[in-house]
Length: 112
Image 1 (cartoon, rainbow, N blue to C red):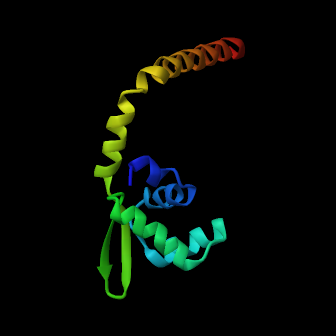
Image 2: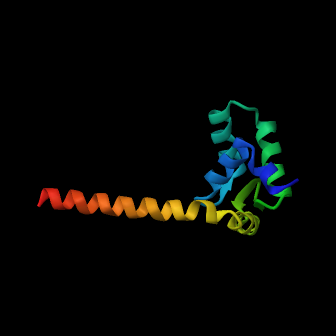
Image 3: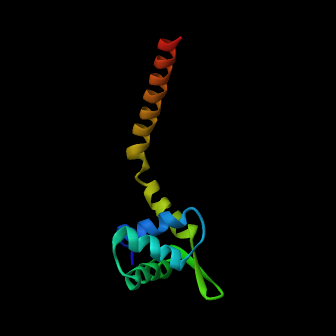
């Protein structure tokens, strides 16, 4: 499965967002995702399997629990692919930063 096929699903993206803060037990992930997306536990398990099988997450057993964490290597591959296209938005972001700084300077000048 291509990385963007994996990441194209909002449930899988949300799971990765949850894991961005650190390792989580499968049960906690399942609870959060079931509440947010109103899907079944088997559906959550399938999404976790897709992420694991495609290298986006790692899992380690701890007793009866399974702890999931983000695998940064898969995300680095996506980042490298996106690097080809950064030239399309990087100048705009630089311009935005300049305008924000200009607005802050103007506001400071008016309050002095």
